Length: 55
Image (cartoon, rainbow, N blue to C red; front, side, top):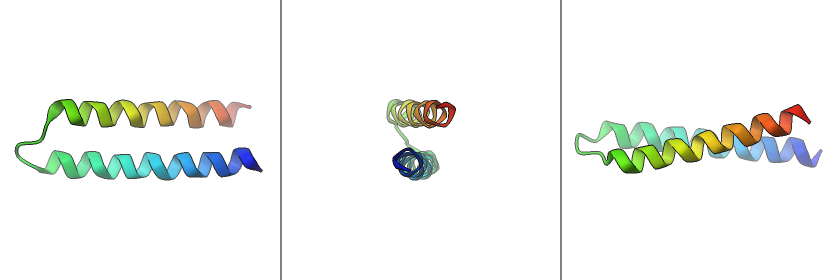
């Protein structure tokens, strides 16, 4: 069950990052480097979720 809880936690963080990315992109003077860093974090979370699901 601990793995399921971890997957849910990562899923929530993944969704939160998506919301932050969308909010950042709405600003006309958004920082592309910041957006890129957020996207990398989101991708790492997705990869971890997929890895846990494959176990």
